[in-house]
Amino acid sequence: MSTNSVSSHSKSKAALLVPGLLALTAAPVWARHIEKHFKVDAHPIVTIHNPNGVITIKAWTKQEVMVMSDQSSDAIEVEADQANNRVDITTHAISDTASPDDMRADYQVNVPEDADLQIHDDSGAVNVANVLGDMNVETIAAGVGMADTAGYTTVSTVNGSFQCLRCSGRIEVRSISGNIRLEDLRSSDVLAQTSTGNIVFNGQYLPNGSYRLKDYSGVVEVRFSPADSFDLSATSLKGKVNNQAKLEPSHHGFLPRIGDSLVGALNAGRARVEVTSFNGTINILKRN
Amino acid sequence: MSTMNCTDFLNHIDEWIEGQEVPGARDHSRTCAQCRGLAEDLGTIRLAAVTLPEADADPSPHIWTAVRSQLEQEGLIRNGVALQLPHRAGWFDSIFSFVPRPAFAAAYVGALVIAGFVLSGPVHMPTDQDRWRERTQRTSAELNAQLEAAEKTAMASLTTFSPDVTADLRQNLSIVDNDIALCEKSVQESPESEIARDYLYNAYQQKANLLAQISERGEGR
Image 1 (cartoon, rainbow over the protein chains, first blue to last red):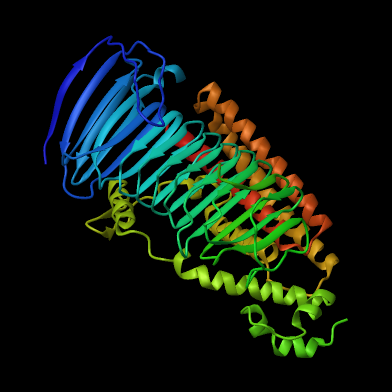
Image 2 (tube, rainbow over the protein chains, first blue to last red):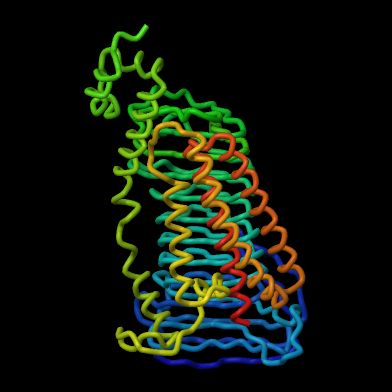
């Protein structure tokens, strides 16, 4: 286990180009750039607390954590410390006069692929790629993008969007007004919930998988192929359910007594899909 | 015309909800709302029971590692042993910090237990709309009072966020309040509807989580 600070310089300019899901940011003038490396064992834990900024985390093959940060002001300080097999990264004000705009720090963090992540980022963006450990991400306005992840993932946003591409492992995502997009998913346990945001599920239906999508007033779109196998229950209490699937009567489906509902099985009904909405629209649509 | 009566239906309800063919059961369930409701509820329980092992599966060992690590980081345990430290406020405390500590636990747990009972409720009860309505109103009033007080505490923390984030938080609080209002109306209209009560309960929970998040983040600054 070792820690070494490699570089620190002032007034560098950065434009982060992040592949995949990821964001191309404006090029702010940075007050400070920091790079640190930490040797870690298997299953390290990396925590990040950042009020504002873009956090990009990628897995690599090295058994170390690399932290690169760019901060917008000298009124804040970026700390990256190691305690045993945990690396803690925090942004905090060191001046009472630090304005909200001063609180911005962008991070690029490389971690071993079995790392567990705990991330808090109020605004900005969080992007994670190829990490196979468990992840907990909490944001307010920051959007969250994941690609090729595999751990037990819990995401909570207020109005930040969530997008997951080729993710596997158990996924629980909750938002109030953020949109949720689950593309090419390979998970057997999905829970996605938003109030006014929209939900798109376009993933695999694994045997015995459970897919629960819940919305208040947004649009829920569930994509399927004719060969998929699932038991479907879709109910919109005050809204509408549109369906393109040729469902057979289900062995254990009972229509709720109120709202617009449908239940039934597609093929052998191996997975269970439960979609509910309060007054939004549910669309069960064939994949293009 | 159904040839099966309610007693016959109840005698075969297990097979029926298991999906077995029971002569006359389908016709009877179409014509008898009570039996249909009972079968629907039992079917829901059965499905829930099937999914329970997955839902309650032990979390990944890494989660425990992370929890322990966090507790150690916060100084609450050392080498896995809990320390007797002065109390430190967390989200659970901050959300109901307006209530004196001994009262806090009882009030909070009480409200949620009542909410859980009334809003999620026994799965099937005889349709008694007035009784449902009365109980739901009582619970809603208690929860709204709790949340209103928690909101006052959380609002004080809003100043610590950037103007943009503050605006987002306010807007989303409005969204949740609107959801609560809509769901309360819906429960008033159909007090026996489980799905309506579930949405109302969920909306309360969302608001509590949001207020907790505001208080917790504000506190950390």
